[in-house]
Image (tube, rainbow, N blue to C red; front, side, top):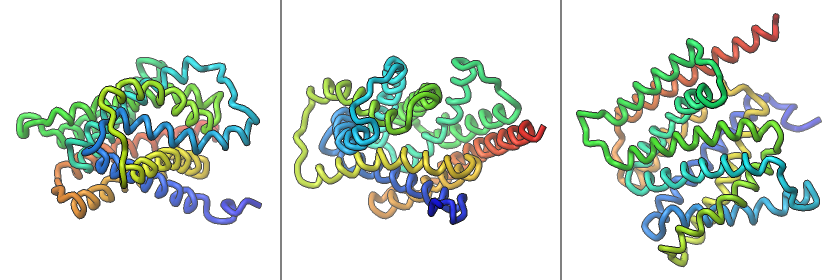
Amino acid sequence: MNSETQKSPVLVAALWMLGMVFSLSTIAISARELSAQMGPFQMIFFRCIFGLLALTPIVLYQYGQIPLSKKFGNHIARNMSHYGGQVFWFFGISYLSLAEVFAIEFTTPMWTLLLAYFILGEKITRWRAVSLVFGLIGMMLILRPGLENIHFASFLVIVSAFCFALSHIFTRKLAQIESPTMILFYMGLVQAPIAIIPALFNWVTPEGLAWMWLLFMGIASITAHYCLSRALALADASIMIPIDFLRLPMIMLVGYVFYGEDIDVFIVLGASIMFAGNFLNVRNEHKHQQNDVGH
C-alpha cells in the first residue's frame, strides 16, 4: 500500500501545498535578488534551461524518447500567455513590495472565471458572481485609486494575473490529454527560445551568487507545479485554497525582515476579501458536484 494512503490524505495534501507555497516564495525571493543584475527575459530563459535540464531525464525515462505532442498549437498558446505573465510578474517584483505582488496576483481566479465565460462558455453562477465582486473589491482596496498614486508596476502585475488566468484556460484543455510532466517540459521547450531573443539585447553573464539564485528559481518552478498537482490529487481544492493563502503572510514576513518592506493593512484586507470570495465559490461548487453525484 502507498505510504501516503496510510496517512490522512488531507494532511499529506496540506504538506504538498506547503511545498508549493515555499516554492513560489523561493521564486519571488530569487527574482528580487536577481533583479539588480539582470532583466526578466534573462531570468525566464535560465529558469527554462534549468527546468529542461531537470525534466529531460524524467521524460526520457517515462517515454524512452522526447515525444511529439499532437496539440503543439495548444502548448504554444498556453506558453505565450504564461510567458507574458512571467515577464510582467518579474517586472512587478523589481518595483513593488513582495506582498503587494502576491496580493494582486490573487486576482487570477477572478480573471479565470471571466475568461472561462467568454472562451469556454462556462456559466457565471451566483457564487462565481460573488467571487468576482469580492475580487474587484479586494483589488480596489489594494490599489486604492484616488487615495494613493498607483505605481505603474501594479498595472503590470494585474496584466500578469490576467495572462496567468489565460494560461490556466489552455492548461485545462491540455490536462485532458497531456501529463503534467509533458506540460512542464513543453513550457521550457517553448519559452526558452522566446525568452533568449529579448534577453540577448541586454545580456549580463551571471556571476557568483547569481548562479545559485537562478538554480533555486529553476528548481522551485518545477517543484511548485509538482507539489500542487500532488496536493489536488489527494484533497479537494476547497481545502487547499486556504493553505495557498499562507503565501501572503509568509512573503510579507520575508519582505519585512530582509528587505525592510512595510506591512500594509490594506494589502492584507484586500487579499483576504479576494480569498474569501474564491473560497466560497470553490466550496459551494464542490457541494453542488457532490449533490449531483448523490442524485
